[in-house]
Image (cartoon, rainbow over all chains, first blue to last red; front, side):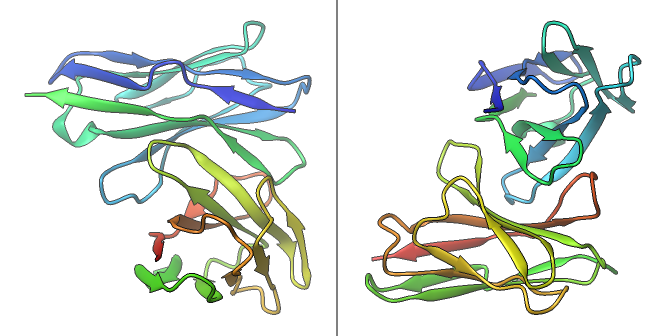
Length: 114
Length: 111
């Protein structure tokens, strides 16, 4: 069975600094997708960034970037220039190509200190 | 604007009663999903549907039922057989192999 592990239940960072959230996954598949979702206090799930496993280049979206290490099955999220609005729960998720079932990690609660 | 609408936002029921949570999407997505979220935890898949009139059990389907009579709608019924129904429920939809779009969720409290 596929599993996604986020080993940091909570993280905090000073405003304007950089923080990295960890995610590892377990799979025997070769074609899959990885995602980071953000859930602010409103509880709306917001897609932050996606990575296709066949792409070697790490995905970036403005201040958000990933470090995708396929052999190590690692998919960390780096947030640069942290802002107060980045405070939220962050979930790592995995989707097998051709399937429709998204598997989520337990989440990391990120606090931004002003 | 296209999106996913879940209603109501808050729902209260007495133990032993069935309750149906609504989910409607106008994104023309084929696939729809129901997830459950408990405090401090991630999302767990209850049911999903890839096409009208077809659906599959997720990881925690016991005590729940769904229907998919229309592409736009995927209601979830929480039955009295669900032993611990109080939770936050999220509906989502997606085109094939694409990120999920989520609704705003329904907070169900059963007393």
